[in-house]
Picture (cartoon, rainbow, N blue to C red):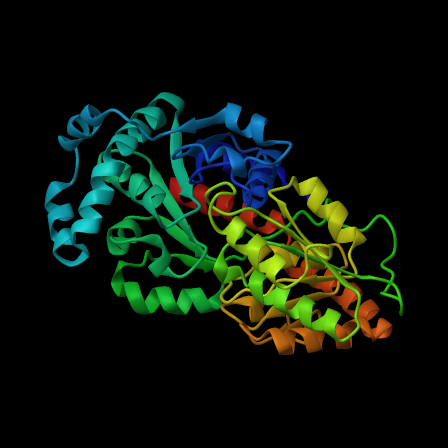
Length: 413
């Protein structure tokens, strides 16, 4: 949907917008790249900001070089930069926060002050009036400190449980112009934890996908009896993503005579030197060396190709705030099986546009995969309904529109 002249005028009046993503561009950051492109399509001037580049093993997208070339990285290795920033830091407020947040918060402040000082100067030089932070970790602390040091307004997006994002949450949220939260479940948790430190405007806005890019170029064909069952999974290699449970489910299927083949796209946070070898060892221990493959971090275009070639998409997360990988699969019309964990139920309505199984239960997962693979009519129905679900409620354009609208509103307040 094209932006109206009135919308574009409001966007221009808001000035340049900073878009701050930690360690950009990482393997899971395609959503941010899409949203940024949509903001610019709607007339926004956007400065792409980050804390530091990601490890080399996580730089996998075709657009990564372009993204890094236009990103300003705020982190500084110069210890003198922190001392120079102390003079403008809100020391009284930080001292109060330390009484409850403790030494970990002090460490985070020391690490964030130089970047905050740089953000203040950068905003003044470029005319950045508002910074949106896609994190509630140290990147949010940088923006909050910068605001208290005379820098730009800022807003936050909460992508997962607050406990994942470190200490000092009250300080990070207290001065935000607005915030978005990706699910109702997370919103309730944040309200309970933050109380009056929540900003006045907090909106639920799920992540989304580019529904034009993630679509099939040929009709979905359900799996056929006697042919290999092609299963695809996509998610960073971390124990909580449940990849080991999915491998166990595939081993169970093969023991039952189902010729299941699995590909898993994604890498661990150490660029292949962390959980990857552990998972590879488990794969081989289960006798799946010829039937399951860890692909590592791959480009978004290759993810789409493998989705279109798959019979089923399965991600067995122990906890998932929402799940862009599920969205991409559903947008491509791939019947999707997820776990009833975190906020996934707000995306996949069990039995309507996908299937949900309990987390950490390989046997039930294997049963669900086998039952779906044996029911071509149900596969076809979930293919259609999954695509429709994403088109109606999870387009990436929605998030860009909301950020620009709210940034323009705060600029005129």
